[in-house]
Image 1 (cartoon, protein in one colour):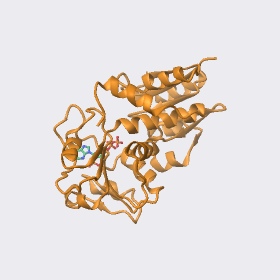
Image 2 (cartoon, rainbow, N blue to C red):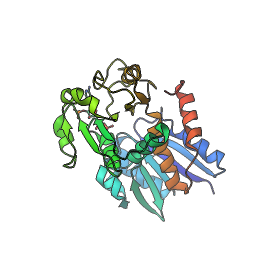
Image 3 (cartoon, protein in one colour):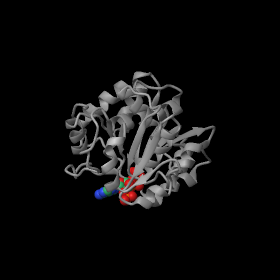
Image 4 (cartoon, rainbow, N blue to C red):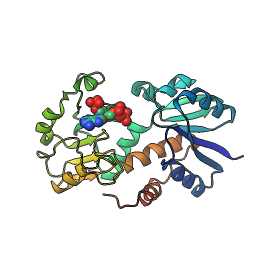
Length: 275
Ligand code: ATR
């Protein structure tokens, strides 16, 4: 019997998840379909209950429902609890179990696409929203030397970091950029249509530092372009998008899909070349 999977968000019409997941189902000969459902915030409860009534096998959750959906879960895994957000839901014997694959998706993309190990790395995260929190706690699971956080609103970063991390204002962090091996932008600064904005000056960046932006529209942000000109190794947000999806797919089917194929499809759809 055909299994139904989906995405709930508002808006969802530009989402590349249906394309990516349906292609993976097809190429693996899995009888399943993934559909993007536009769900207004006031209809979230009904939507989650409706999907259960329809025996939906699992779904992704995107903006603005990632936190609000938690109260409609039957169970939450530890990572989702720690992050205060759910992006992947699995129907486990009629129970909705909420997970979060965003942070681990970022870390897997970073290690596999940039061909690095994280042990001993000094890492700076820019931003203190949901994406920053997920990436931060996933990085802490590895033997990194430091994960520090900087944000426009310093208090928001102070609210979630553990004591071995330092928190900086953006101005303070700009002076310390040269101390890091990996710098990650988790803010929306530089995203279409505000493509001329950059989150942090990279004038002190060391050559060969890894500079990663979770934005994938545009594929090459102005910030990544500046980093590249300084001799940094750069990564855009396609990797995180693909790997969070691949990890969700694995939770639903038990199969880790071909991420290269997913990545090519997404880049083709976005009309560009990766960096
Ligand atoms: P998400 O959950 O997707 O990560 P979010 O919770 O809205 O999104 O967080 C957005 C992040 O981008 C925050 O760190 C925010 O900084 P503040 O905490 O000071 O609001 C950051 N951000 C957004 N616009 C910004 C801007 N113009 N300049 C600097 N930081 C910005």
